[in-house]
Length: 70
Image (tube, rainbow, N blue to C red):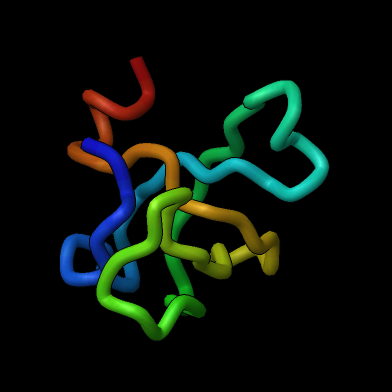
């Protein structure tokens, strides 16, 4: 699933994000959501989150741990 709707993202979820530096390459970074930074209910490029390790990016995908890490 993509991460364009804020209602779908919850703290503690495992997500794949795109960091600002990786926007051109599309490299994904995986982690656990600590904070949701986008206040709008929808964002076309993905909801911005802070991971538990402090990295900030837009959610590209989320789902069950097994599905996301395949």
